[in-house]
Image (cartoon, rainbow, N blue to C red; front, side, top):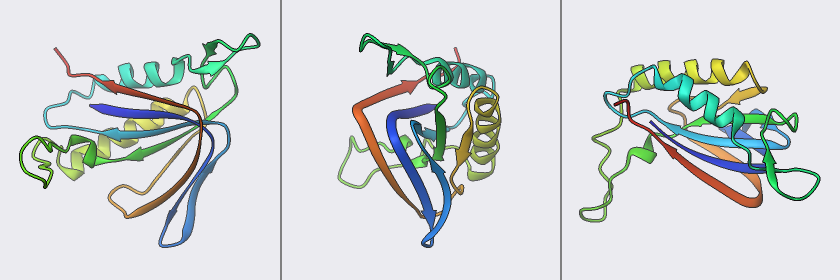
Length: 147
């Protein structure tokens, strides 16, 4: 599994010009499931994302999590994070999980995240338009395989 986590002041997600999700201060998380990723990783990812201390405290140190600041999470499925561009110029997505299983895991992660911070989602498999105001910018890449 892979996630790209960005600290934002706000974000909104549209499909076919229709507003689907909108958040204020919080995190935009682009999430990818790869073949053979264990569902058990969901707990690891939800714990890391919810507790990642990337918001500033009163002294300007990144010491607070999204839940500490009362922030929200926008979780977006993005199979292109599985893209391999090491050969040629067209990325290969052979490591991406099947849509059915990937969507199941994506929804499970959204449910787990929602237990700690209000979590909104995109539309799995849709062509989405995302407008976000990054804050910092702060971008963290989180990747883990079950051992």
